[in-house]
Structures are given as C-alpha cells and as structure tokens.
Length: 187
Image (cartoon, rainbow, N blue to C red; front, side, top):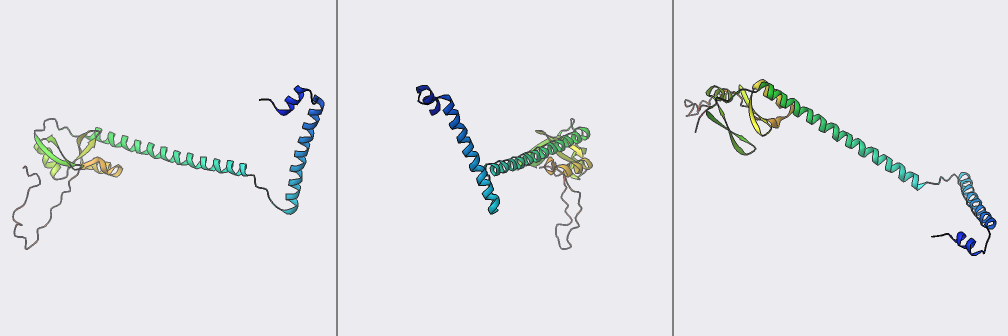
C-alpha cells in the first residue's frame, strides 16, 4: 500500500521538492506544538503524565514481583528436595535388617492396614518404642528410635509407627487393674 505522497508524485500532481517541503513543515509544526505544550505545563505547574511510561513501569514491577515469587518457590522446592534426600540417607544408613522375620506385624498407614514381617525381638522392640517404622519410597523400613526422632524433625509424615513406652498407673477403683493387656497381643 503506497502513501498519498507517493501516489501524487506518481500521478505528476506534485514534484519531489514540494513533497519534501510539506513533510518538513509538518515535522516543524508537530515539534512546535510539543514545545508549546511543555512551556505551558511548566508555566502552569501541571505535570503531563506519560501513560505509556507508567504502564511500562507497572509492568516491570509486576514482572519483578512474579520473578521473586518464582524464585521463592524454586528455593522452597530445592529445600524440600534436600530434606527428602537427608531422610532417605538417614533411613538407608540406619535401617534394621528384618529378613529373617516370620511374625506378621500389622500397623495403620493412611487409613489402610499394612503388614511387615519381623522377628520376635523386633516385634518386642516395636511394641516398647525402641524402634520405629518409617516410609521409604513405596516400602517400609525399621530404624532405631533416635533416628526416627531426627526424621520427625524434618518430616513428620515419614514416620509411620513410633510407639511411646508409657506405663500408666491404674486407677484405684479400676476392677480390671490386675489384668494387664500386653502391647504385642496377636489376634
């Protein structure tokens, strides 16, 4: 699409010198208008707001805020990943061997009954809170209580079973006080 000036030149209605003179005068008038408006603004104390400049600054501020938020999220994800790596390392270094386990130990994990096979000694230690069951990937491992407490400090959801050894004193009027229920009762 050609401009009006090009069309008039082609038709021969104006020559190149007149077209250039008209363009110079148009630029001169536009410059004078802006200079006059600036002088008027200075004289009256009015400040002309450049909307494009304000929008650009606002967009830059919003972009900076978004990038800060994204950086914060990435930093939190990296910290969470590091914590999970620490938990995995703690479990792998301190897990208790349960390969000879023949006794089924059942426990609840997220409203589901799960079971692992342990030895009689491990079953007693689980019951008295000396060892704990922790989640490692899709499976479960046994770790000493000290390690389980370190894991709880990092992520409470990783420890599935950590019994507390408490010997409650029976009430004086309790008629069944003489009948103690063992912690490792098998059904």
